[in-house]
Image 1 (tube, rainbow, N blue to C red):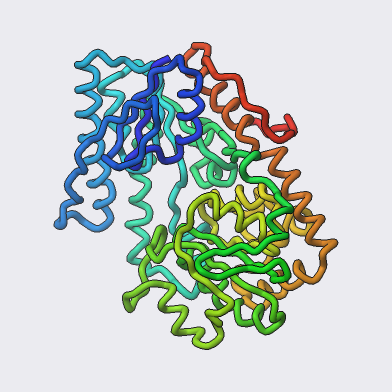
Image 2 (cartoon, rainbow, N blue to C red; image 1 turned 120 degrees about the vertical axis):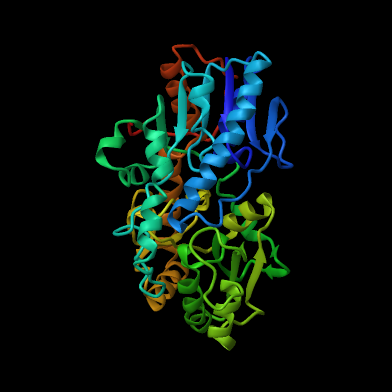
Length: 427
């Protein structure tokens, strides 16, 4: 089968399905993307030139659409050149968020197109206005609504959508949901898995060594920012450090901004919170290693005594899935996003996003109640086996491709994975 993938940051959300297709050795895979250094053997990456930014004179509410149609032009011209060279895909798969796919139906009007539909923006009731500490001006609302222009154009193209969680799909208008397939994303259960041996040896992360007798609290976010509850975690840390002298804390994440805004006064959110907390953050027991290698990250989760996951009602992080698969004892913020993954007192503990002492108390409870911790760890792993197995994700993805193309998808024999339940929620 001939595949065309599209994502401005190759390979984006398509890493696992692309590797799966490459392993079959029977598919031709072309990937249109902005140029970057990432590489997957067996994939022909076709870069397009980064388009000019949105026009400065454009209304602020229209700038994202302006940028999107510029990307659509760039990706469309690249696709047209591919067609001139004789490439005819059997299916086009890509992310609709940046506009790159908007013109591809003009190039290949009869080719099925499957677009990743990640989130439908709303000025009320979801992420915007969730955190009263960082309120949005009403002037932001037209811009937020206009962010859905790309969603609406995409939903009116021939083709179908895919979404990774039921909650994310529920953010879309009811009339759109029957066009969006739920493809529940998985993780590699043979990599992200419990490993008791890690707990019996020292572990060094970011220059801090965690000894076997230490109690390790972990927090992970792509960037340390309010959308992922960074201020809440920082305000909870002094409570944790006072409660137990054997606690050490690792705060993984960069100093950029993935979602939301930079601090009003400039600088980074870490700098701002360090100034606020002062001596409450004991840097001999708290480390900020930035982003760390994946093997170190997995080992850290395997060693964790309590893992904290915080988020606004927004797209769930991969780290939540990986923490569940690794069998972490998780304390998470109680919101719609998280409740699709965690049931309170079953496979994790849920606490208010706005209560640092309560967050600290939940972490201490996990550390001081080994029976509770063991039960939550066991159930977290069991949940991952039932809902997050990579093989199930790839099987469901493949079934959707077969339905859309009417073709049989050749796949490699799957490698043995940790046992998993075949019980799956349907789209």
